[in-house]
Amino acid sequence: MRRVDLKKELQQWYRASAKEVVAVEVPAWQFLMIDGEGDPNTSPEYAAAVEALFSVSYTAKFMVKKADGVDYGVMPLEGLWWADDLSVFVGGDKSQWKWTMMIMQPPFVAAPVIDAALAEIRRKKPLLAVDRLRFERFEEGACAQVLHVGPFSTEGPTVERLHEFIDARTSRRGKHHEIYLSDIRRAAPAKWKTIIRQPMVAARSSSRTTGVQP
Image (tube, rainbow, N blue to C red):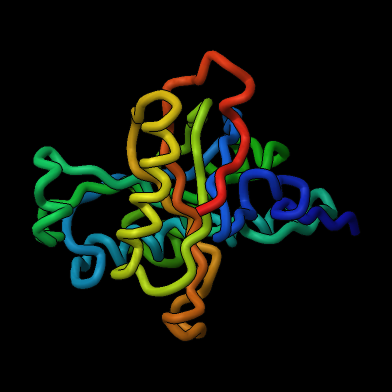
């Protein structure tokens, strides 16, 4: 049995410091993805989307383990967030939030494995939202990221630090990206760890890719 620790291998992108914002170049990876809209705290659509992502991801994991003798940990849930009217983020109207939830899949998990996992989940859980899932490559390129520790409701100052880092060097682009490192069902909200990432226009000078202390 070969064991693969993806979080360790990809720690440049899946570990972050709460003390400093850093610039990273994020390569293309393959993801299971699903789109939706609404308050993640109350939306049945959101809950169904997350359940579908994890159900297929774990099914693919066990298929690879059985067929190829490779054991790996399922990667964390990630989310891209945006809205047609950005003022809803300030006003707190979460019903207008739009999102793409996703889970990165290892490079050795090929499309036929995902197709088989989808078919298995359709058979076992026919009401699950697996037909809304898609499997595709996603690349962000130049980004800045920082770790937020605490509940999601207190992310504001952390996001501001991230934006200040980018705005002092170049400009923002793309969608607000969060990587959820904690199991919020078990950990206390004060200990939740979330990587907050924002794509940015690539800086022209290499001196602009260093971290900055808060």
